[in-house]
Every structure is written in C-alpha cells, then in structure tokens.
Length: 169
Image (cartoon, rainbow, N blue to C red; front, side, top):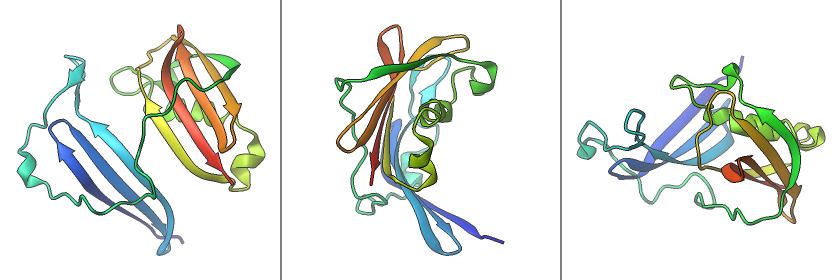
C-alpha cells in the first residue's frame, strides 16, 4: 500500500489573490511539486472578492518555494496549428456550470503523443486560465511543438481561454 502525503502552504496572500505551493510525496519520496495562483471569485458578481475572514489569520511563507521558477503569463503570440474542434459537454462542468479547470488540461493532454506521457518525458507544465467556458461552447484546440516541448491553446471565437506550455526532456 502506498502512502500519499500532500504538503501545502501559502506563499503570498493579498486581498482576493494568493500564491500557493504544493508538494506531493509517495512513500516519503517527493513525487511532484506545484505553484498555483489563486483568486477568490464571486460567481454572482463575476469578479474577484476579498476573503470573508481576516487575512491576519493566515501564516504565509514568502521565502519558501516548491518549484524552481514561479508561475508566469504565457506568450499567447506563439504559433499554433488547429488540432481539433471540441464542444463542451455536461461532464466537463463544475458546480457553477463552467468548464472545470482540470478539463482544459485533459483536452490538451489527450491530443499529445501518448509516448510523451507514458515514458515520463514531461519536465514541467505551465497553465494559464484566461476565460471561462460553458456548456455547448464550441472551441478549437490548437498546438505546436517548440524548442522546449509543446505549446497549446483552447480558443473560443478567436479568443484564448486556456494556454498550456509543456517542457519535455
């Protein structure tokens, strides 16, 4: 039986925004690390909103990083070729009827060469969620190989909703 341990901490916290870090251990061996940018969104007002509890109640660790480089805004001007059109399905939705963030990554990963994933060639994944998608939205999944790996986008009506950069060995 494997024992999975997840360590997480807040690196920065400011108003409705925070940077959080994660480390996943399997049998006490570090398996994967991640840095994630979070924002509290009021789904009714459709915008950011301060946390309902005092920020002073949270301990932050500004000098502790889990990844070698911080998250970044990807260059959306990179060249991509259309791969496939996709229509958002019911099974893609989250509790507020938007496409679940994990689904964007699924859609792109499903279009990568299988060997890349199965032979552990992925070094890092950088994702930017830019616009929400809803049920029945028609999107174009595009991508291209780069000198570092792959760059992919999910686009609705020529506006990028999601960008993904995968660095490979």
